[in-house]
Length: 166
Image 1 (cartoon, rainbow, N blue to C red):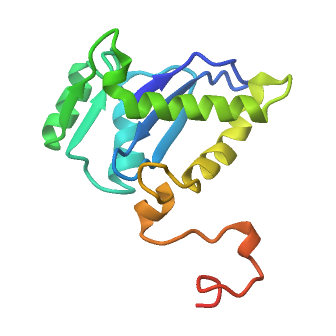
Image 2 (tube, rainbow, N blue to C red; image 1 turned 180 degrees about the horizontal axis):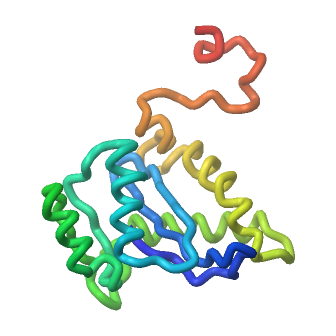
């Protein structure tokens, strides 16, 4: 899990991303924030990871104050989540998340023209595309590995396929 930003501020003053990547499926969860405090990280993990999937065994984070706080440490400890820290000045130790956010930022940049502050509007499209793209290391999409089935995509609507005719 990592914080990305600051990005160009939106009209709602959002300029940070909190990014979590599942190492097995490569599924990513992302939320936007104007600023990120330890309570935001705790709420993000609870709402976007635990309530949607399960309690993770391990969370790998950088050494930012939001992750290295007593509140977040207590939260992880109470749920028996092993909280591991990547090595400072060596971002490769949290390589999966680093690679994920580089892909996200690169794809966002390609979808924006001169209005860089509209990146939040494009984020859901970029996340959808990422989740539907075959991974080289897995041979599957993050969606398939997360949900155990292929997603019905817009081009399949109205076409008789195994998924749309069930």
